[in-house]
Length: 468
Image (cartoon, rainbow, N blue to C red; front, side, top):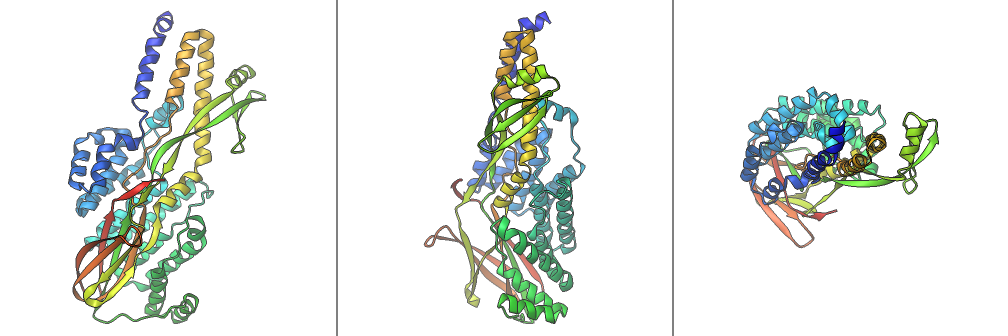
């Protein structure tokens, strides 16, 4: 005990140094990787990931798998991409709380825990594996991945006891309908499209400001007629003010996904709370601006009084910062066929990220307050034994109060798509991305369209114009 007292400042300085080195956000720590991504140097990004030793940092191993899988998808190496996404999926499925790390997080911060991924991040693993399999022509495997997205979303909703607002995903059903459609299983495609339409109309418009895609309405009408549901088809035609247009018998379909920009990054925010005694060994954490009153049982009146004597404390928690895409919209053109049209948003991942964090904010705040209360009670006890050590521990507690800013930073800002019926043979397709009304960039593709088959195309725009 005397040794601890004599060396208390030394030990606390070591702890302070350790926490100060970890104050940078996860985004800041990955500056070289993100710079390579922003500049489109995907091979360099892959080398950075391969030589960084990130796979040895077990608490961040999931992010290593996710980033490696995404970069390989961007490069076009679908098999290697699936290899890493499958590793990510296995990790998520087998994830079990590390109670030692959890206990450590309560006296330090949640960064020490293994990262398990946000719920929507876990879903998006299967978006990429679906695309990978579809682009390799394996629609059976792609369909399995779609179904697993739906099962995983249900599991996430169950973990919230149904209290989360983001509990249904329209894009999951829309994507499933597209895969059934590609297999010419029009009955199941119709059911999936109908489910997607319901969720867009009931949830997405109000909650995520994402409208029902016009293409989905067309697909709903088309698959209704192809299934023989003529009454439903006519009803949808009347409701949507659209007419069913039969495709030419020698045509195939091009289904093209445009991933626009990059999703939000996590940063740290904080809230100041006043601690007020509430009696019977309980204190209230109060923030009048936000109308928050959160009770916490300390255990006895002496401890509650010592905790309340701290008056005001700062609690750190994560927040999102959006990376605003450079391109506001996109269109396409096939000059030889005089066909053109516009892309529509199927999934706004930026909006879903904010909604998901909002769904768990009360839990996040409760855990942060528990963490801080335990720190402060320990500090009060140490002060009684050694004033100097108590002061040093107070500094350590203040510095170690950090939010977990880890997230999958290579997800797109939004997923947009088009479906177009084209004659069989080689077709030249031009993607036109628009940053404003007058500025347009173009990227050319050539697709070999097969009669009665669906061809998949993808493109990722990486540029962004600033933070919001």
